[in-house]
Image (cartoon, rainbow, N blue to C red; front, side, top):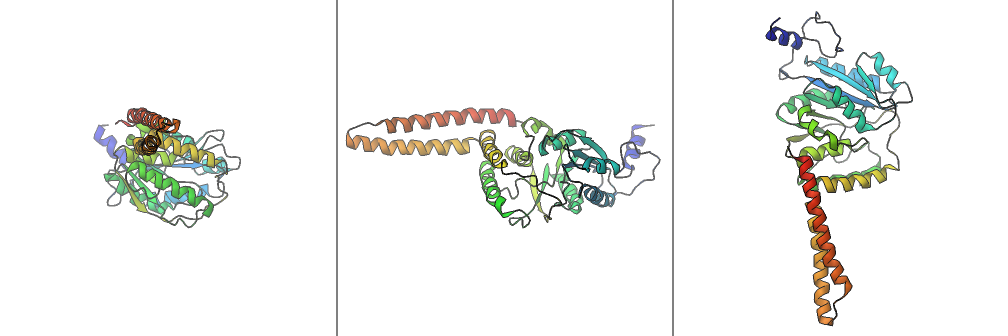
Length: 319
């Protein structure tokens, strides 16, 4: 069989079937605007027995309508309920972390399994409607990543988490030097080839989506937002009070890895300004104090750390 015939055969493979599907299945017409596209949908799941089946079926319904080749990959993160059993019963590609490793670890495992250039991620808790996937896939033809923007209100997000989200979004936008509407949206479509170089930087836990957004935006990748509705989750949230510590660590990592001079230079200038004011006061009082010397030295140390962090950042984020 010639390479052209093989390519035509793959293109007519029905969407949503497992990799072991038979080639004799009738061809499916590809909808207008989806020519040449294919998609791997990664669904991380941890104790989501109440929603994982419906999420898979919703993805199937939406992607079947497009006619494009696609696959659904469910990664079970060591669930203690029937999530793994239910996912396997649906006939999609299923893998497991065996023990609870983290949201980011599940996504990285799923991306590793992905067979297509375009990869989508969507949560298994019912909060992100699968109906946005086809349009986001089309938009990603001219982008490196398309992110579902839940909107400023995010009505279904608990109020106690909104201040932390606002601080994180504002700080990330400052580092990226552009407006980041939704930093950690769990619905996005991206090119696998553009993400792979950043895999070593991506964390194992919930900050995966935050880090991937900054990796793309701080490295000059094409990224756009598209408005989506955010539903009410099925089951219980996995966010715990101890994650506040992870939030602080994430802010520190963001500072060092992404555009560190945006933080270190103003901080050093502030200390230098305090030292200068105190220096002139000391001259007036005819007494050079330890505070003045400490302020100047602190500014120099901060700038030195900033330059080192910037060098490390450029090494990690270089094309």
